[in-house]
Image (cartoon, rainbow, N blue to C red; front, side, top):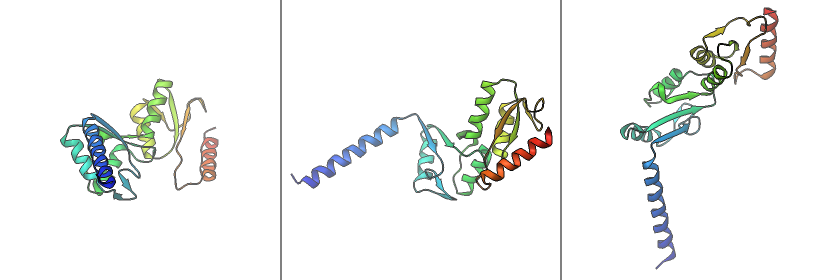
Length: 166
């Protein structure tokens, strides 16, 4: 038997076995940027994959380490790219931050310097998200770094905002 034919058959069997394993999974967690889309373009095969997830009634979650957008905004972004995904299938670093804070310090207040995604996640998770520092700096502080703003600019703005409250 030809070695190339044997290798091709083994590769096909391995691929088939991998597909069967994948099809048997009940849930999927996918990163977003670079996996689902790049910039403002869906990557090849994503629409078919998501359609398959829905058709097969699979559980799935899209994760992102970006805290700048809310799940609703992520849903809308994918919608503009032609992918219809329910808002419940997104989990952001802002949501993880908010959940962590609410579990570590139940009932705390938070002084938030950040974008809408972080503020909304904290608002949804923490009862007392305040515009002012609780008891003049006696609260949790949550800072979101905007990719457009440099660290020096963010530090200056943070210091100015805190100084105005003290």
